[in-house]
Amino acid sequence: QVQLVQSGGGLVQPGGSLRLACAASGSIFRVNAMGWYRQAPGKQRELVATITSGFGTNYADSVKGRFTISRDNAKNTVYLQSNSLKPEDTAVYYCNAVITARSLKTENYWGQGTQVTVSS
Image 1 (tube, rainbow, N blue to C red):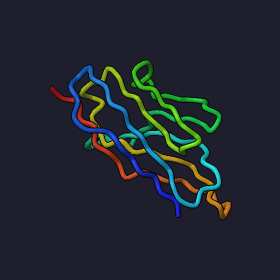
Image 2: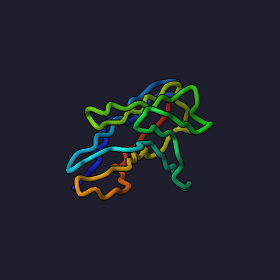
Image 3: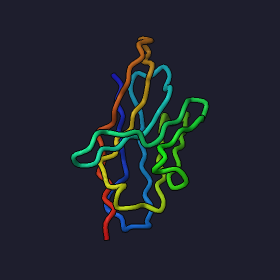
């Protein structure tokens, strides 16, 4: 069984910073692409950033230059460093990973979600 467990998040003032982490654990053969998505109230879930196993990255235009995605393959963990936060960044953030289990079955997994609120 494979699971993703998120940590970080919370309340921050505009212009502040937060770091989110998401660790994959369980019967893992390989962790492929990983990423972060977010969902604001009344809106659809949207991509924030992704990172491949080879460290190639992709960002939503709305976060380019402010957010940085990174990963530690030895720990099966993905991070999202969020700087210069704006009220419009307020959302529930979800990590995502494409994982090949030891059974060699590849599936898409989601973390439990964590609230990020940017407000003064």
